[in-house]
Length: 126
Figure 1 (cartoon, rainbow, N blue to C red):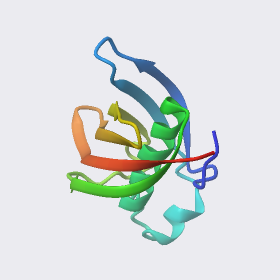
Figure 2: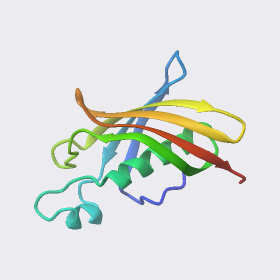
Figure 3: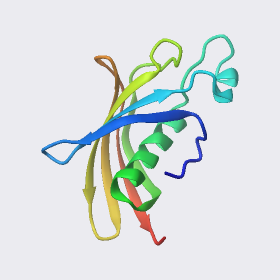
Figure 4: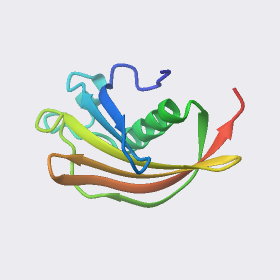
């Protein structure tokens, strides 16, 4: 898997559910340089990084290179501190059409919902 978030997170495991959703378990790297600047003494996972993780996992699960076309209902509902909650569970409901892929994502740590969003990606030719 090609990633621009080098060493930011690790995909621990994933499964495809009976209804076609994917459940991914990732581990954030609390030592990553991003957390030193965002924010010193109070590390917070940047929302844009969470959105990039969803894109990278969607590419992994579909085998397609994707470009973010639009995002709606993006709701950051809890702060993700990599020292307190480095283990995240992401549910991705992926719907594939001819030229685009729609993904509904819910990201949780424990029972806490941290992020909910719907995104549309354009499929890029490899």
